[in-house]
Image (cartoon, rainbow, N blue to C red; front, top):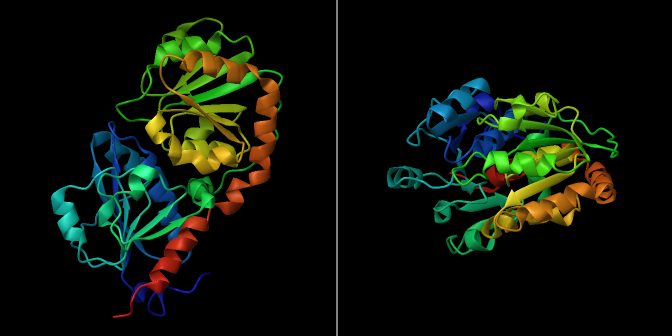
Length: 323
Protein backbone atom coordinates (compact mmCIF):
# COMPACT_ATOMS: atom_id res chain seq x y z
CA UNK A 1 0.00 0.00 0.00
CA UNK A 2 1.25 3.50 -0.80
CA UNK A 3 2.18 5.94 1.97
CA UNK A 4 -0.76 8.08 3.01
CA UNK A 5 -0.70 11.66 1.65
CA UNK A 6 -1.12 13.25 5.09
CA UNK A 7 -1.31 12.02 8.66
CA UNK A 8 -0.49 8.51 9.74
CA UNK A 9 -3.82 6.76 9.21
CA UNK A 10 -6.53 7.20 6.54
CA UNK A 11 -9.08 8.34 9.10
CA UNK A 12 -6.77 11.13 10.32
CA UNK A 13 -6.75 13.11 7.08
CA UNK A 14 -9.22 14.99 4.92
CA UNK A 15 -10.87 13.26 1.97
CA UNK A 16 -10.23 13.92 -1.71
CA UNK A 17 -13.34 15.57 -3.13
CA UNK A 18 -14.49 14.70 -6.66
CA UNK A 19 -16.70 17.08 -8.65
CA UNK A 20 -18.16 15.18 -11.61
CA UNK A 21 -20.68 15.89 -14.38
CA UNK A 22 -22.85 13.16 -15.87
CA UNK A 23 -26.12 12.94 -17.73
CA UNK A 24 -27.98 12.43 -20.98
CA UNK A 25 -26.44 15.51 -22.61
CA UNK A 26 -22.82 15.10 -21.51
CA UNK A 27 -22.58 11.29 -21.29
CA UNK A 28 -21.46 9.02 -18.47
CA UNK A 29 -17.74 8.79 -19.27
CA UNK A 30 -16.78 11.37 -16.64
CA UNK A 31 -18.56 9.43 -13.92
CA UNK A 32 -17.17 6.08 -15.10
CA UNK A 33 -13.63 7.47 -15.06
CA UNK A 34 -13.96 9.16 -11.68
CA UNK A 35 -15.66 6.13 -10.12
CA UNK A 36 -12.74 3.96 -11.20
CA UNK A 37 -10.22 6.51 -9.92
CA UNK A 38 -12.04 6.77 -6.59
CA UNK A 39 -11.93 2.99 -6.24
CA UNK A 40 -8.21 2.98 -7.01
CA UNK A 41 -7.50 5.70 -4.46
CA UNK A 42 -9.60 4.07 -1.78
CA UNK A 43 -7.69 0.84 -2.39
CA UNK A 44 -4.57 2.81 -1.39
CA UNK A 45 -6.21 4.15 1.77
CA UNK A 46 -7.30 7.52 0.36
CA UNK A 47 -10.80 8.55 1.42
CA UNK A 48 -12.91 9.98 -1.42
CA UNK A 49 -16.22 11.86 -1.52
CA UNK A 50 -18.38 12.85 -4.47
CA UNK A 51 -20.08 16.08 -5.52
CA UNK A 52 -22.25 15.28 -8.53
CA UNK A 53 -23.63 17.65 -11.17
CA UNK A 54 -26.11 15.36 -12.90
CA UNK A 55 -29.58 15.02 -14.35
CA UNK A 56 -31.85 12.06 -13.59
CA UNK A 57 -29.91 9.79 -15.95
CA UNK A 58 -26.61 10.69 -14.30
CA UNK A 59 -28.06 10.21 -10.83
CA UNK A 60 -29.36 6.77 -11.82
CA UNK A 61 -25.96 5.81 -13.27
CA UNK A 62 -24.23 6.86 -10.05
CA UNK A 63 -26.71 4.89 -7.96
CA UNK A 64 -26.20 1.80 -10.14
CA UNK A 65 -22.48 2.07 -9.44
CA UNK A 66 -23.07 2.36 -5.71
CA UNK A 67 -21.88 5.97 -5.50
CA UNK A 68 -23.34 8.35 -2.94
CA UNK A 69 -23.08 12.01 -3.92
CA UNK A 70 -23.16 13.50 -0.43
CA UNK A 71 -20.42 16.14 -0.64
CA UNK A 72 -20.42 19.83 -1.52
CA UNK A 73 -17.53 22.02 -2.60
CA UNK A 74 -17.71 23.84 0.69
CA UNK A 75 -16.68 20.70 2.57
CA UNK A 76 -13.11 20.48 3.94
CA UNK A 77 -10.94 18.36 1.65
CA UNK A 78 -7.32 17.51 0.90
CA UNK A 79 -7.75 18.08 -2.85
CA UNK A 80 -10.39 18.63 -5.50
CA UNK A 81 -10.55 16.40 -8.58
CA UNK A 82 -12.58 17.90 -11.44
CA UNK A 83 -14.06 15.65 -14.13
CA UNK A 84 -16.52 17.92 -15.93
CA UNK A 85 -17.21 19.78 -19.16
CA UNK A 86 -17.80 23.09 -17.40
CA UNK A 87 -18.19 24.59 -13.94
CA UNK A 88 -20.94 26.99 -12.89
CA UNK A 89 -19.60 30.25 -11.46
CA UNK A 90 -20.74 29.27 -7.96
CA UNK A 91 -18.78 26.03 -8.23
CA UNK A 92 -15.67 27.87 -9.43
CA UNK A 93 -15.91 30.31 -6.54
CA UNK A 94 -16.36 27.53 -3.99
CA UNK A 95 -13.33 25.68 -5.36
CA UNK A 96 -10.86 28.55 -5.05
CA UNK A 97 -9.94 27.75 -1.45
CA UNK A 98 -8.86 24.19 -2.33
CA UNK A 99 -5.32 23.20 -3.29
CA UNK A 100 -4.53 21.21 -5.30
CA UNK A 101 -7.33 21.36 -7.89
CA UNK A 102 -6.71 18.43 -10.25
CA UNK A 103 -8.36 18.30 -13.68
CA UNK A 104 -8.70 14.83 -15.23
CA UNK A 105 -11.18 15.67 -18.02
CA UNK A 106 -9.59 16.27 -21.47
CA UNK A 107 -12.51 18.53 -22.41
CA UNK A 108 -13.36 21.32 -19.98
CA UNK A 109 -14.48 24.88 -20.69
CA UNK A 110 -13.16 26.03 -17.30
CA UNK A 111 -9.74 24.41 -17.32
CA UNK A 112 -8.14 27.54 -15.85
CA UNK A 113 -9.52 26.52 -12.44
CA UNK A 114 -6.95 23.70 -12.26
CA UNK A 115 -3.63 23.89 -10.44
CA UNK A 116 -2.70 20.42 -11.76
CA UNK A 117 -3.75 18.55 -14.91
CA UNK A 118 -3.42 14.76 -15.23
CA UNK A 119 -4.42 13.52 -18.71
CA UNK A 120 -3.69 10.74 -21.18
CA UNK A 121 -3.15 13.47 -23.84
CA UNK A 122 -3.14 17.25 -23.83
CA UNK A 123 -5.58 18.55 -26.47
CA UNK A 124 -4.26 21.85 -27.91
CA UNK A 125 -7.53 23.64 -27.18
CA UNK A 126 -7.32 22.71 -23.51
CA UNK A 127 -3.66 23.68 -23.18
CA UNK A 128 -4.50 27.22 -24.24
CA UNK A 129 -6.99 27.61 -21.39
CA UNK A 130 -4.71 26.68 -18.50
CA UNK A 131 -3.50 29.18 -15.93
CA UNK A 132 0.16 30.18 -16.18
CA UNK A 133 1.55 28.07 -13.34
CA UNK A 134 -0.59 24.97 -13.88
CA UNK A 135 1.38 21.74 -13.50
CA UNK A 136 0.70 19.30 -16.34
CA UNK A 137 1.42 15.59 -16.47
CA UNK A 138 0.40 13.50 -19.48
CA UNK A 139 0.75 9.73 -19.51
CA UNK A 140 -0.88 7.30 -21.99
CA UNK A 141 -1.37 4.87 -19.09
CA UNK A 142 -3.98 7.22 -17.61
CA UNK A 143 -6.33 6.06 -20.39
CA UNK A 144 -6.64 2.68 -18.67
CA UNK A 145 -7.93 3.92 -15.30
CA UNK A 146 -11.31 2.22 -15.92
CA UNK A 147 -9.71 -1.10 -16.97
CA UNK A 148 -9.30 -2.56 -13.47
CA UNK A 149 -10.72 -6.06 -13.38
CA UNK A 150 -10.84 -6.48 -17.17
CA UNK A 151 -9.00 -9.42 -18.74
CA UNK A 152 -7.25 -9.85 -22.08
CA UNK A 153 -8.48 -12.69 -24.29
CA UNK A 154 -7.38 -13.96 -27.69
CA UNK A 155 -9.76 -13.13 -30.53
CA UNK A 156 -10.23 -14.76 -33.95
CA UNK A 157 -10.92 -12.66 -37.05
CA UNK A 158 -12.72 -14.87 -39.54
CA UNK A 159 -16.03 -13.06 -38.96
CA UNK A 160 -16.85 -9.91 -37.00
CA UNK A 161 -18.88 -9.68 -33.84
CA UNK A 162 -19.13 -5.94 -33.28
CA UNK A 163 -20.02 -4.09 -30.11
CA UNK A 164 -21.42 -0.62 -30.74
CA UNK A 165 -21.79 1.92 -27.93
CA UNK A 166 -21.84 5.57 -28.93
CA UNK A 167 -20.96 8.50 -26.71
CA UNK A 168 -23.91 9.69 -24.68
CA UNK A 169 -23.68 13.40 -25.52
CA UNK A 170 -26.17 15.40 -27.54
CA UNK A 171 -23.91 15.27 -30.62
CA UNK A 172 -23.99 11.50 -30.94
CA UNK A 173 -24.31 9.86 -34.35
CA UNK A 174 -27.70 8.85 -35.77
CA UNK A 175 -28.14 5.18 -34.90
CA UNK A 176 -30.14 3.41 -37.62
CA UNK A 177 -28.10 4.61 -40.65
CA UNK A 178 -24.95 3.49 -38.82
CA UNK A 179 -26.43 0.06 -38.07
CA UNK A 180 -27.41 -0.34 -41.73
CA UNK A 181 -23.89 0.61 -42.81
CA UNK A 182 -22.29 -1.98 -40.53
CA UNK A 183 -24.67 -4.78 -41.48
CA UNK A 184 -24.00 -4.18 -45.18
CA UNK A 185 -20.54 -5.70 -44.74
CA UNK A 186 -20.74 -9.48 -45.22
CA UNK A 187 -17.95 -9.95 -42.66
CA UNK A 188 -20.31 -8.87 -39.85
CA UNK A 189 -21.89 -11.90 -38.19
CA UNK A 190 -23.44 -10.04 -35.23
CA UNK A 191 -23.87 -6.49 -33.99
CA UNK A 192 -24.57 -5.82 -30.31
CA UNK A 193 -25.87 -2.28 -29.78
CA UNK A 194 -25.75 -0.66 -26.35
CA UNK A 195 -27.82 2.50 -26.62
CA UNK A 196 -30.98 4.01 -25.12
CA UNK A 197 -32.39 3.99 -28.66
CA UNK A 198 -33.63 0.68 -30.04
CA UNK A 199 -32.36 0.10 -33.59
CA UNK A 200 -35.01 -0.82 -36.14
CA UNK A 201 -32.94 -3.81 -37.29
CA UNK A 202 -33.19 -5.35 -33.80
CA UNK A 203 -36.58 -6.65 -34.96
CA UNK A 204 -35.09 -8.55 -37.93
CA UNK A 205 -35.67 -12.28 -37.75
CA UNK A 206 -32.08 -13.20 -38.63
CA UNK A 207 -30.91 -12.21 -35.14
CA UNK A 208 -27.82 -10.33 -36.34
CA UNK A 209 -28.68 -7.27 -34.24
CA UNK A 210 -28.92 -7.49 -30.46
CA UNK A 211 -30.07 -4.44 -28.52
CA UNK A 212 -29.03 -3.87 -24.90
CA UNK A 213 -30.12 -0.95 -22.74
CA UNK A 214 -27.20 0.96 -21.18
CA UNK A 215 -26.23 -0.09 -17.67
CA UNK A 216 -23.48 0.30 -15.11
CA UNK A 217 -21.54 -2.76 -16.35
CA UNK A 218 -21.70 -2.72 -20.18
CA UNK A 219 -19.03 -5.33 -20.80
CA UNK A 220 -21.27 -8.09 -19.54
CA UNK A 221 -23.22 -7.74 -22.79
CA UNK A 222 -20.09 -7.55 -24.94
CA UNK A 223 -18.14 -10.62 -23.84
CA UNK A 224 -17.93 -12.20 -27.30
CA UNK A 225 -17.18 -9.21 -29.51
CA UNK A 226 -13.93 -8.90 -31.46
CA UNK A 227 -14.33 -5.26 -32.56
CA UNK A 228 -15.58 -2.29 -30.56
CA UNK A 229 -16.98 0.87 -32.13
CA UNK A 230 -17.63 3.85 -29.88
CA UNK A 231 -17.52 7.61 -29.68
CA UNK A 232 -14.40 9.08 -28.10
CA UNK A 233 -14.95 8.18 -24.44
CA UNK A 234 -13.52 5.85 -21.83
CA UNK A 235 -14.92 2.62 -23.31
CA UNK A 236 -12.34 2.77 -26.10
CA UNK A 237 -9.54 2.18 -23.60
CA UNK A 238 -11.60 -0.49 -21.83
CA UNK A 239 -11.98 -2.36 -25.12
CA UNK A 240 -8.26 -2.11 -25.87
CA UNK A 241 -7.48 -3.31 -22.34
CA UNK A 242 -9.30 -6.53 -23.24
CA UNK A 243 -7.26 -6.78 -26.49
CA UNK A 244 -10.26 -5.75 -28.58
CA UNK A 245 -9.46 -3.40 -31.50
CA UNK A 246 -11.43 -0.16 -31.29
CA UNK A 247 -12.76 2.35 -33.78
CA UNK A 248 -13.66 5.85 -32.58
CA UNK A 249 -16.36 7.81 -34.40
CA UNK A 250 -15.28 11.33 -33.60
CA UNK A 251 -14.88 14.88 -34.89
CA UNK A 252 -11.75 16.75 -35.93
CA UNK A 253 -11.75 18.94 -32.82
CA UNK A 254 -11.88 15.89 -30.52
CA UNK A 255 -9.31 13.84 -32.39
CA UNK A 256 -6.47 14.85 -30.01
CA UNK A 257 -8.31 13.29 -27.03
CA UNK A 258 -7.11 9.83 -28.03
CA UNK A 259 -3.85 10.57 -29.84
CA UNK A 260 -1.85 8.34 -27.48
CA UNK A 261 -4.19 5.38 -27.99
CA UNK A 262 -4.06 5.89 -31.75
CA UNK A 263 -0.26 5.83 -31.59
CA UNK A 264 -0.39 2.31 -30.10
CA UNK A 265 -1.97 0.94 -33.27
CA UNK A 266 -4.88 -0.55 -31.30
CA UNK A 267 -7.27 2.34 -32.01
CA UNK A 268 -8.28 3.97 -35.28
CA UNK A 269 -10.42 7.10 -35.59
CA UNK A 270 -13.10 7.69 -38.21
CA UNK A 271 -14.34 11.24 -38.65
CA UNK A 272 -18.08 11.71 -38.59
CA UNK A 273 -19.49 13.37 -41.67
CA UNK A 274 -20.11 12.66 -45.37
CA UNK A 275 -17.21 10.22 -45.79
CA UNK A 276 -17.79 8.27 -42.58
CA UNK A 277 -19.68 5.31 -44.06
CA UNK A 278 -17.09 4.61 -46.74
CA UNK A 279 -14.17 4.86 -44.31
CA UNK A 280 -15.93 2.73 -41.70
CA UNK A 281 -16.78 0.05 -44.27
CA UNK A 282 -13.17 -0.01 -45.48
CA UNK A 283 -11.86 -0.51 -41.96
CA UNK A 284 -14.24 -3.25 -40.85
CA UNK A 285 -13.69 -5.24 -44.05
CA UNK A 286 -9.91 -5.30 -43.58
CA UNK A 287 -9.68 -8.31 -41.27
CA UNK A 288 -5.89 -8.44 -41.61
CA UNK A 289 -5.59 -4.91 -40.23
CA UNK A 290 -8.00 -5.73 -37.39
CA UNK A 291 -5.87 -8.76 -36.54
CA UNK A 292 -2.82 -6.47 -36.27
CA UNK A 293 -4.77 -4.07 -34.06
CA UNK A 294 -5.72 -6.99 -31.83
CA UNK A 295 -2.04 -7.95 -31.47
CA UNK A 296 -1.13 -4.36 -30.63
CA UNK A 297 -3.88 -4.18 -28.01
CA UNK A 298 -2.76 -7.49 -26.50
CA UNK A 299 0.81 -6.28 -25.97
CA UNK A 300 -0.33 -3.07 -24.26
CA UNK A 301 -1.64 -4.96 -21.19
CA UNK A 302 -4.10 -2.21 -20.26
CA UNK A 303 -5.34 -3.91 -17.05
CA UNK A 304 -1.78 -3.93 -15.74
CA UNK A 305 -1.58 -0.15 -16.20
CA UNK A 306 -4.91 0.72 -14.60
CA UNK A 307 -3.44 2.13 -11.38
CA UNK A 308 -1.26 4.78 -13.05
CA UNK A 309 -3.69 7.68 -12.59
CA UNK A 310 -4.36 6.86 -8.92
CA UNK A 311 -0.61 6.77 -8.26
CA UNK A 312 -0.19 10.16 -9.95
CA UNK A 313 -2.96 11.69 -7.80
CA UNK A 314 -1.30 10.34 -4.66
CA UNK A 315 2.04 11.82 -5.75
CA UNK A 316 0.32 15.17 -6.28
CA UNK A 317 -1.08 15.00 -2.75
CA UNK A 318 2.38 14.22 -1.36
CA UNK A 319 3.86 17.22 -3.17
CA UNK A 320 1.37 19.81 -1.97
CA UNK A 321 2.60 22.45 0.48
CA UNK A 322 2.46 21.45 4.13
CA UNK A 323 0.28 23.61 6.38
